[in-house]
Amino acid sequence: MTKITFDKHLQKQEFLNIFKGYEREVFEVEVRHDPLLGNTSIYNKLLKGKIKVIFGTSDHGLIDEMVQASEKNCILCPDKIENNTPKYPEEISTTGRIYQGEAVLFPNLFPISKYHAVISVSKAHFLRLSEFSTEILSDALTAARIFVNSVYKNDISPLFITLNANYLFPAGASFVHPHLQLLISTVPYSYHKRLLDACDKYHNTNHSNYFNDLIIEEKMIDERYISQKGNWHWLASFAPSGSNEIIGIHEFMDDFEALSEHDIKQLSSGISEVLNYYEKMGFLSFNFTIFSVRNSQNQKGFNCLVKLITRQNLYQNYRNDDYYLQKILQSELMITLPEELASGMKSI
Ligand SMILES: [Zn+2]
Image (cartoon, rainbow, N blue to C red; front, side):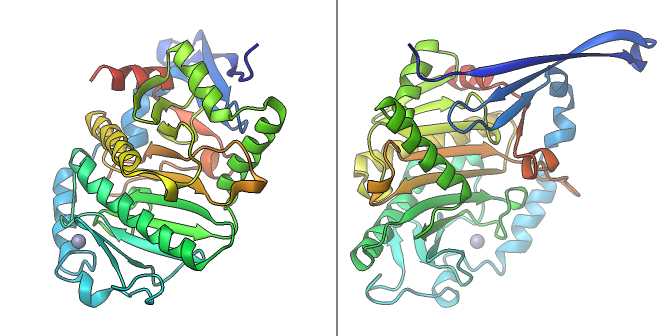
């Protein structure tokens, strides 16, 4: 018997359509529940027609202007990073900052966790999504792993790690320049804690890892499973917690720090392919988070994973794509069904 339930509810409602001479019409709303956390995601096929209103179209002239205007004073650009960013003490990094390929890691001046590093990803001040190459991402992720490793040597506490990306202003970035934010905390933040607790509970009940069972189920159903790259499995979430959510799950590791060079390369390659596909779909702004845990003796059944979502496009006076539904009701709208998303990405 399957241990994972993909729960869907169909709600129907009638009203008199003004555009069809007040003819009675039936509308359908599909509500899905995430099999692990129970989060709700909502789909109404009519909203596909409103996609331009919801996400907008990127204004490339405006983007060019913003890129040029922000480049002059950008402290993440290679000619300014050395004299404008803080350094770590010797016990964390003998060189103060961590350099790996084009990536440079340094402390955030305004930390929001015990350790909070910023990673400038590229020498280029702006990248199209298709320009986030495996190599660029792999260097940035390697810089993060080197930093986590030196923190581990100096700090024996259980540590909860997230490596986060905000790309462009609609995704919450304050810099145009591609960068990542690495948070290492002794306390997991809300969503991370919910994930860990739910995986632990699932493990205690079923004596198996939720995400490993999910991979088996999704491969069998073959509607949302996309591909395998090394030890990483890529799929579109059944009930996404963001637009066009794609997740990459490691088969057996829970700790980002312990990933091999090959694991980091394969993960970077997967992220690069997803971003490339987001560009093909017409998106420019995104968030992603890699979730990881160290010393997980109190939490079992967790796999290191990355979650990627698209955000609002960038244009003059853009609206925010998070409203009461996402921020307060903590539910997500599905404009593209996960099954269409997976099938589209598999076909490229
Ligand atoms: Zn820059």
